[in-house]
Image (cartoon, rainbow, N blue to C red; front, side, top):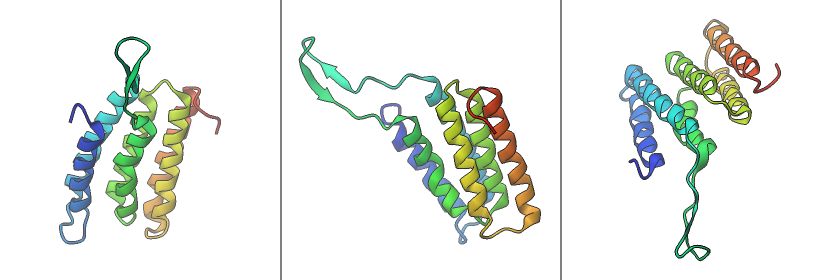
Length: 157
């Protein structure tokens, strides 16, 4: 899993998806998975992506390995969970929290802005299945994430 971070992320996502399925209905496990994914994303955001080109001898390209990049890893980590958790307020709130924490931990404005946009998509998806009372804390959390990004220089609200 250290050589292929996305593989490990997808395994955790599979556990989360099974946990929020109607047959299992275990949001606590899904929330724990989201916390683990958040930790992975924070570490990934702090690292420079590896060089995809390998040379031997110098100046002779021998191998090119495409890197998923942070945006791709972010999508792999949260996109499926977002789609399946539209009716689960606790899981959706934890997704928003994970995005806010990840956004606050990265110095890159484009990454922060992308995370805020993903938070807005979470709330928009939940609007299909949840009432106004449940949506209020989600909107508050999304607004807070936008302010964090703006305060860090990531975007203007």
